[in-house]
Image 1: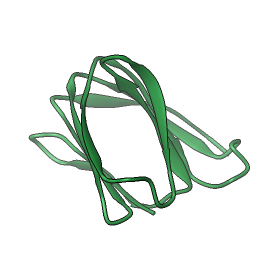
Image 2: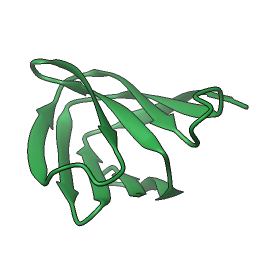
Image 3: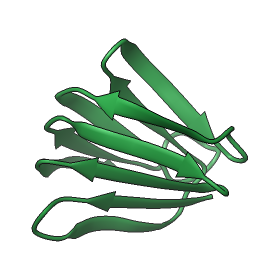
Image 4: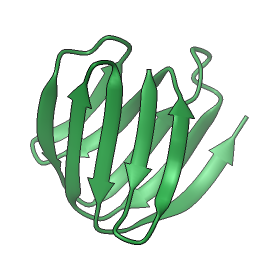
Length: 89
């Protein structure tokens, strides 16, 4: 699936991923390939990009509040701000 992480200033991430873990306002949730369409509000917290199935290749961002839209196997994350925390391979 395709993931884009956007802030008002720039695009932070774009590409094919295995999944993404997001800090929803009602708790942490994970989106994987072919997830049902949805829109959800996000709270400040950690966003974890699962680059591949191994779960050891991840990219972590500390995000401010925002929204996520899942539609046609594309995940678009719109946040007020975000910082790269770490990248592990």
